[in-house]
Image 1 (tube, each protein chain N blue to C red):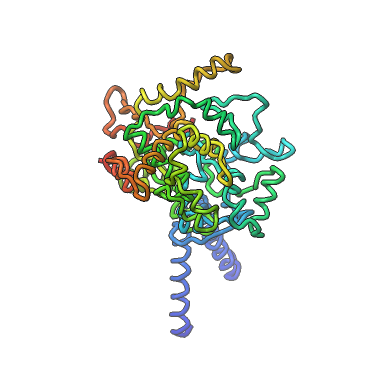
Image 2: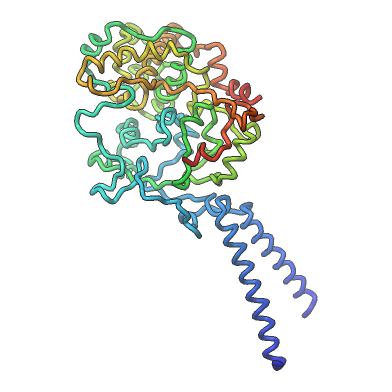
Length: 218
Length: 251
C-alpha cells in the first residue's frame, strides 16, 4: 500500500472510532422522531392506566374517565356560580376575603398572580401584558387598577377569577380556592399603588432569585 | 492438518466472529443506556406548539398551562380549554390550530405524544420536587428555547441519584418563569382557617356521607424529610435532600 493511502485509512479509522465512542458514551447525539430503542423492555410498560394516558378498552381511548354525576372532589370544591352570576356570588361570599392580609398571603398571591394573571393583565395589573399586546381584549377593560375595578367587592373579584368575565376564561379549575383569595388580596395591593410593582419583603426577593433555595442547600 | 487456505479462512472467521460479537455486546450495553438512547427524542406533535414562542417570547409561566403540578404527582398536559382561553381570540383562524378547534368543538382530547417517560416501576412525584423549589429546567432542560419539545436529560436512575446525592451541583433554583412559589412553609393556622367553611359546607350539604376534607389544597408548603436512621445511627445526609433509599421511588 502506498503511504498516502495508509494515512487516509488511518485518519478514517480514527474518525470512525471517535464517532463510535462518542455515540456510545452519549457525547454525540442528535434529535430523533423515533421512540427510544428498547433492546430489553424489562417491565417498563405495564398494563395499567396512566394519568392522561391511552386506554383502548374504552371507545374514546381515554384512560381518564369523566366522574359520574354528582361526584364531589376529594380536595376542594367546584365553583358553583356561572360566568356573569355576580349577584349570587356576592351574596354567598358576603363575608368577603376569608384570608388575613399578611405578608405571606400577599407573597403567595403575587406568585399566583404572576403565573396566571400577568400574561394579560401584566405584572402591575395595568392590563398591558404581552398577550394583551398580541391582540387579546383591550387594555382599558383589562386594567385592574382603574376606578371601576377598585370599586368591585372582594367577592366580585373572586367571582371573576373563578368563573371568568367577557373573554376572560374561568380559572377555578386551575387555581385553588385559597390561592384565588390570596390573589384578591394581591390585586387590592396593586390597586393601592397603580402602575408600580409592590415589593414584598423577603418573599418577593426570593421569587426572583430563589434565595431560599440556596439557603437550604448549605 | 488443514490446507493453508482453509486455515486462513478459519482464523479470519474466528477473529471476525469475535469482533462482531464484541462490538454487538458494546452496542447492546451502551445502546440500552438512557443517556444514549433516550436523549434527543423529539416526536412530531399533532399541533405545532412552540414553547419557544409561548414561554421564551411571551413569558407565560410554566404553571399557567401545567397547573396542578404543585399538587399532583403527574404534571398535567393542559386541557384544550386552556389553549382556547387565549386562542378563541388570538389566531382564531390559524390553520395550525385546526386540531385544537376541532377538539374544542367535539370534546375529543388532542393526542399529544409523550416525550418524557419513566419506566412504570418507578415513581416520580412532580409536586414534591416543585415544593422543594427545584426548577423545571433541572430535569427538562431549556424548554423556553425549544420549538419542538425534546428530551434533554437521560432520566436514568444514575442520573436521578446523582442529583439526590449532590443537589447543590446540579439543581437549577426556582426561576420566576416556572411559577414556583419560593415562600416559607404554610402555617398550620392558615390552612385550618381556610378549610373550615368548605368542611362545614360539605357537612351540611349533599355530601354528609363523604369524608370530611382534611388535606389542604394550598400546595405550597413542604414537609421536612426526617433525618434517616440506619441501625440507630443518624445518616450524615442533611434533612430535606432527596432520599436515596430504594423504596422512595420504587414502591
